[in-house]
Image (tube, rainbow, N blue to C red; front, side, top):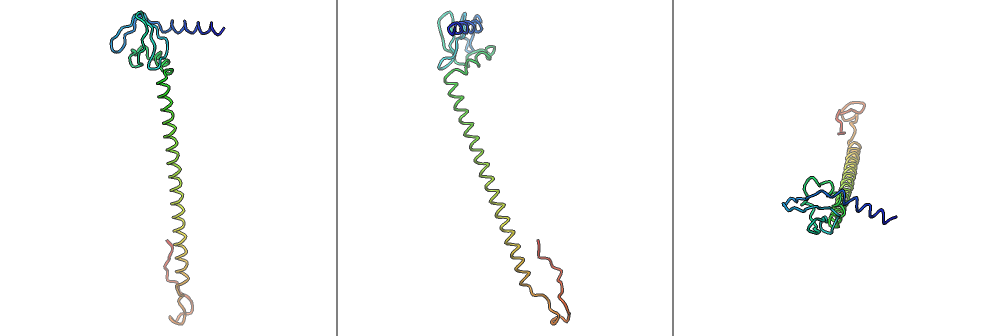
Length: 153
């Protein structure tokens, strides 16, 4: 059963990819060709003169869809796709690390600002306590006087 399915798929692929003559971008013509699949460094093409492995870039635009599907199975393409995915993961990890570092910097900055404000408030409170209240004996008045100055920011 598996053998029948394999033969059917092989015949189907050959029938789908058979298109008469193949003219590459460089101008070379292959008569009665059939695209048979991925090779280690390109796409394997059978033709009247034998077998040739062509790089993906040599195929004409009208075969772009078929070639792209097959190109995914080329080992070099798989390796390049894996490297690209790995690079994207590394970039994402680096962005995450930078975002975490920025969040930590902002948190530290907010804490320093809060600490500075608290210190300033304590300083103002000490200044208010240290400022003597005006007494009635020195000025002739009977109570404390307000100077009308606010020490708050």
